[in-house]
Length: 406
Image (cartoon, rainbow, N blue to C red; front, top):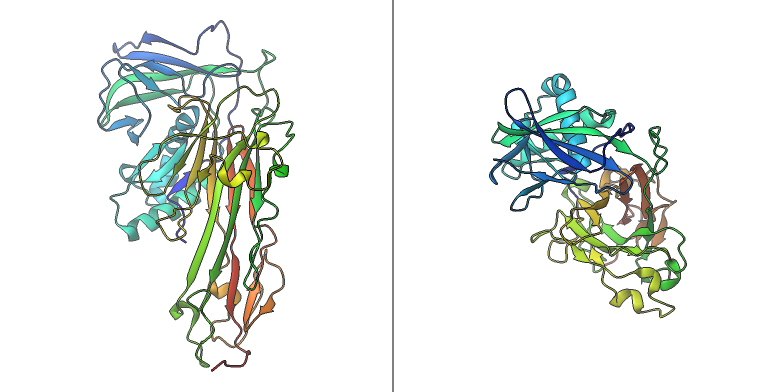
């Protein structure tokens, strides 16, 4: 499984009190006659306020010179708070990026993520992703009142966007990391056993009923066979080739859904990024209202996070909004695949097996060794409106010491 192209920023939004601001956005002009649009974020305000586009065109929109794929309408530009954080990180870390060989012309910003352009050759894209990983791993960038961003077409600046501040429910400045929105993120793992298949008994309406806080659920189950062709993999040669030469087989499935708290009157829409087809926001059902029917979850409207036509391709991210246009994004979840690699379960010479970190001790299943993850799905909040969710397959690999089945 390739590492996702999308990199979620580890940003800490440093909130400042907004003084004398009654709206989320308003305009002004710079000394050079460039129009200026002011944006404010916080309780009761959208995560992506719309500002006047002025003379900004539709083609090659940039923010601080970096390609920016943001939402627009006929007369509005929607400014997502995490997009500003991404732009500020790249601007603030320009020297470090240069040392890492990162070419900003080959990147773009979308939905709070720094991404590699699709037309970059695969080998170079891998290097860019590695550089981005190193650049963003330890970066802590704070948005503060007065932060200013140049927005244009192809680097030709058409207007500036200025952050006026952030407001909280109590009308006071918030300390970093102390404020969270009203959403939680949880994972549900579906175990796999080679002899018994998937155990979906834990995926029922009881998982979601009676939640006291609106919760986004990521459900996943998968299996990866190394050195086999999948279920019909009983006739392996006695002399095993190196793991990198063995045929492999993977399968998996999962969804993202929302269970609403009793007092939550919002509708929720989910967009899945990184699978085939055009990504768009789709309405999803309230999982908390499914009742006790064991089959209700399988008929509910949820969003698939695994490509049905892409051979177990895990999506890159899950974006949740309260409107079908995605103007009010309430959560962005970065999906990661941490399935153990062949070299973690089989030694290089193929003479012994070993247990990778994060997996239980292997047990023999027929003539293979099966490694069950301790945490199939692991959710980790990374910010007020961001989270990482890591998924792990059950791993099945040949036991070098098993007798050959003829």
